[in-house]
Amino acid sequence: MSPATVVGSIDPCRIYGSVYLERDPRRRGFCFATVYLEPEEAFADLLVYPETNKLFADRAGLWYSTEARDFADYALFVTDNRNLADFSFQYTKVRNYAGCRQR
Image (cartoon, rainbow, N blue to C red; front, side, top):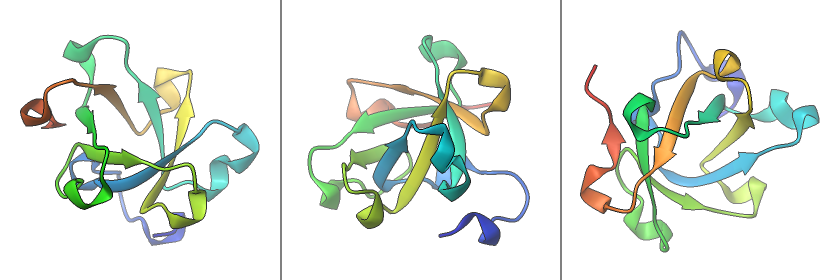
């Protein structure tokens, strides 16, 4: 999915599967969304469980990290500035906790 197909705001509850986390600011324009790695779980919009198998990353918050940008379902740019992010996320060690936070 390219950034040109995004209409409105980014819904973190729809992001799952293989994810490539981009950290090079020169490639920001090629990413689906800008994200912030939240240091505190309580303030994150999305809790992410890092799957070790792509086949199990089948619902919101289940991400399989890939090193191959071209084969990722989503490329997300990681920013250090929370104000520039479309949403924030935090990793969780419990698979059942993965997903969107209730707002």
